[in-house]
Image (cartoon, rainbow, N blue to C red; front, side, top):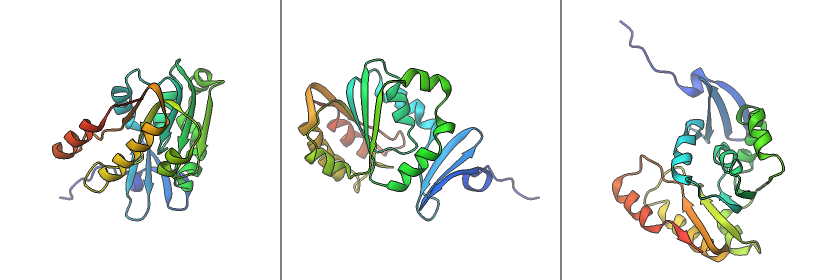
Length: 198
């Protein structure tokens, strides 16, 4: 008897956006972003529950987000009444392009009403370079540019934290996205870094 396999987004889903090595699939009402060969999954729409839990009621004023992904965190941040503007920095221009292609899948008419009038700028630049060269300051910064937290990504996260200190306004805060599947040793080190206060 043949063994049943579960659904796989890149086999069973519908390709709804593509640019370079970035592809977005829609399966069972959820979006999946993969980047590069080997079906490397970078983001999925169900991460919204993690964002809700981790962002709490922190976003306010002028917000900086490092890393776009599917744009799920961007959409959520823009729904906060206290948020005046959102600047999203994304290094990969293919990710920006597929994000633009999936806007109709990601934003509902209700979302559009809530975020109407709020400025959202997406910049195609390196996040670390931006933090050390921008003349702008921010009330809240959200780091979400990595797909995992480990010995390879923690040094860059720490470099980004130093950049955050440079651009945080007094009373501001910076946090990073914590992958719930991070091994304990790296999660503890990560949790000792955040939050960063201005």
